[in-house]
Amino acid sequence: MPGLGVLSKFLSGSLTAYLAPSNIVSISAQPKIGSLGQSWIDLLDRVVRTGTPMAEEGSECLGAKVCFSAVIQSDAVLELFGDQQMIRDMQKVFFADGPNALGHSYAHLMRGPGGGNDFQDIIALLRNEPWSKRAVLTLCGQANGKVPCLNVIQFLVRDRAVQVVYFARGQDIFRKFYADGLCVASMARTVADGLNLAPGKVTGFIGSSHIYHADLPAIRKVLKRGRNFLTGKTPTANSGPRGSARSTSATAQRSARSVPSRPPVPLRTRSKVSRLKPRKGSA
Image (tube, rainbow, N blue to C red; front, side):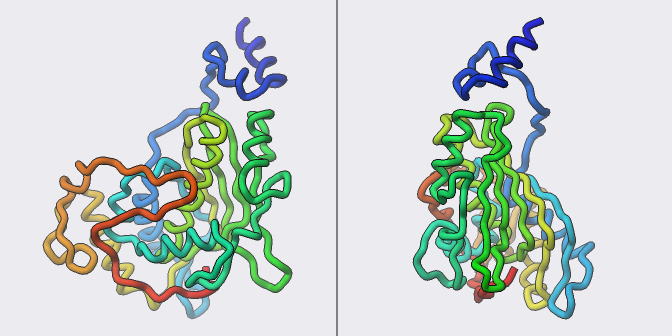
């Protein structure tokens, strides 16, 4: 029975043995995963429709689950409707120690299983123990009452790819969810590159998926335009951000531009959504 022999190799072998052609085993079903932009519009719509009051500030959904591909190619939804400055600022929050418009940094708060924050301990662990469930990056506060929005990011080698699962105590879905998502996807690609594997999917569990009342006018505009775009309706001359006109088919036919794994680089766009004043420390 070849399955037992393969299993023994998995339990005692290295990543090389795990990936040997003779050992290819389907670990779990891999349905087609949507884009980060589509996940953003779907979750934003869910919070608007089914969210419950969050004090006097806004509304929220508790315990939401999201799933999107870690391979970020020319995401037209984010290019058209995302705040590109927020994307750049969030990358500084996660990957740089210097000041940024959001007023906080996670770079020095991240710790892998070996205490590092450069993903090398995670890569080393998964290279030696591909079935490990201990390849976890934690983001801890500094005992000053402040806690990062994202708290745990787990890296798993499954289906011959690097899968990521994260938990967030709370995410501002309109302003920051997609910017966080791009950073997590970049982490997945960094680890995947270090293991010579493909990046898989990102699954997120969010304690509080919330929006703020002050953002509702802008949210409704993005939802209307985003739904039209995802259903294949061509935007009118005034339907895009800042009145940009770009047909769905033209955008879809553009050649894909992969976002590099390291260092993270913001998506380049031709059109930008109106600049939103960042909320420092909110999520």
